[in-house]
Length: 193
Length: 209
Image 1 (cartoon, rainbow over the protein chains, first blue to last red):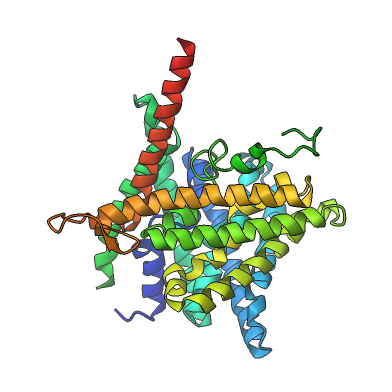
Image 2: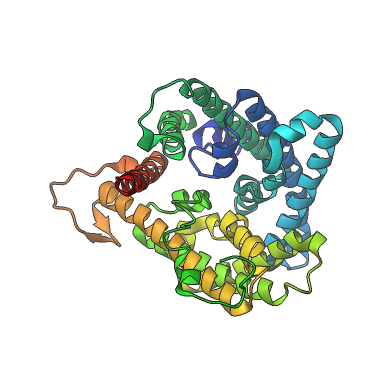
């Protein structure tokens, strides 16, 4: 497959180099909001939306900054754009679904400091993606994040009933599961061909 | 360490971040860089030092400006301050070693969204005197570096049989390459956490007796 085609970029971000399990981006919400499948799904959608918006904005910003030779401002301007996008999502969610707003709690504003989103903007600039490629990248990363979150939530719902030694309970156990999931996702490496 | 006595500066200010409130092992903050760049001890050390630099500098500036920044826009201002210092660290590392810069990749710039730094700015530096926030930042940064090193050293020994590029394992040692790959990061951190929980449980049991 052509490594520059949007399909490949999508698959790459979705499965092969999954943002959470292979690149360690966005671990805080991954460990924090993965208690219930429903919340996890909603969180995934919110993150995917913010990713899309910030990917588009970052693409435009990068063109502007390169044009005026201001590339050292990249980091500051990206983070400002992401913060505003998150604010927008927060207001929308609060207006249309107060229940979801309460369920996501502190993790909604914390999307701003979710490294998956800033990472996405930085990677797409570093790899010099075109507009369509950036969109595919953002969609793939969002889908990959949602998938990882859903898998984790499903496993953790079952684990609530399991008898685990007290030493391993909590974060250590979650990390072990994440490690196993990550091991399983390495199998997707063959997809790249 | 309550708000009532902002004047006293003790050893605790510094050591707090090393063990009792270690950002990675106790508070589970900043996990993304802790797992992503610790496939070798050198990368871990560089990342830890860069983060410490940003922690100290942003602690100083946030603390100096604590009475100037309006409450409503404080988070945005903190992020801008942090982003400024991260840009400096980014260009600094690029100038010192291009090889290291390539190995760490985007993760130097991602220090901006490291929750440890924003957390310190909001919870500590915005309420304390400049010198004190700097010392606390240094302690936190050192704790973070130590945690990163303890992950990086274990992963490098098991994954490549070396420490800082020097061979420590005998030639016959079969390397476990899974430890330098992503899953190894999760496993090693999980093991460290279990060890610390075990120590804490044993301690509390002994105290009970």
